[in-house]
Amino acid sequence: IAGITQAPTSQILAAGRRMTLRCTQDMRHNAMYWYRQDLGLGLRLIHYSNTAGTTGKGEVPDGYSVSRANTDDFPLTLASAVPSQTSVYFCASSDGGGMGDTQYFGPGTRLTVL
Amino acid sequence: GQNIDQPTEMTATEGAIVQINCTYQTSGFNGLFWYQQHAGEAPTFLSYNVLDGLEEKGRFSSFLSRSKGYSYLLLKELQMKDSASYLCAVVDSNYQLIWGAGTKLIIKP
Figure 1 (tube, rainbow over the protein chains, first blue to last red):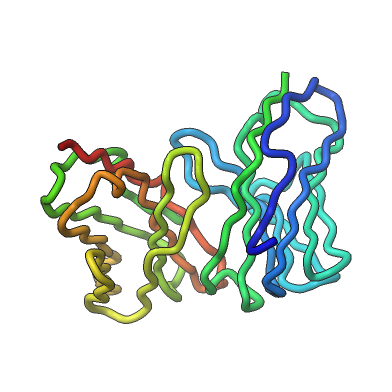
Figure 2 (tube, rainbow over the protein chains, first blue to last red):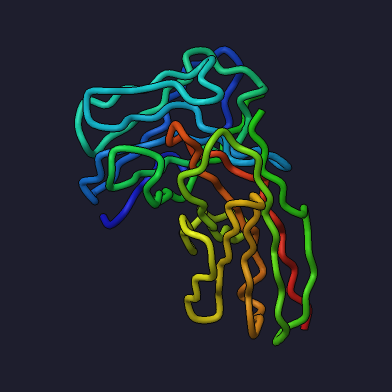
């Protein structure tokens, strides 16, 4: 693989179900990010990780959790999905340890919560 | 609060020039990014400005005026493949990235 991959590509989920969105990068980047993108709104940061073993909350963290056990993987979990979490989710990474660096995005996961 | 303003949508003709503006009000400034996003795809990096002035990269140029809180992206010799959304994002004093909602550019033949 080259760059960032996300899985699944799309998913329809019943409200109340638990769901994990997967993100893997092979660029050995330190920092990784999860965004959601909704029509008419800018990208909104959910959670981030500046380096393996650390995570932080972004602008809209409620209802989501992340972990960063190693450099390559940064899964995003919805503990109990709600319809307002219907969105396109993008994972991104950057070489440096913060958001001042160029970010590289995965292809996105389109999630629908019914 | 922090705010980034971009026009929602613009239309231009193939072969022409278009300027997409971005104004920002943020707590401090540590750089400004432009990204391109084709429909249904991921954003991809176009340019980064941290000092005042114009940065040229092929058909695309990006300008920054920190004193005015203003940037623009200039696209020359427009091609149909330039139809996309263009996202402006500012790095604030805490090195947080603030994203604009994006400008949808429609290119007509």
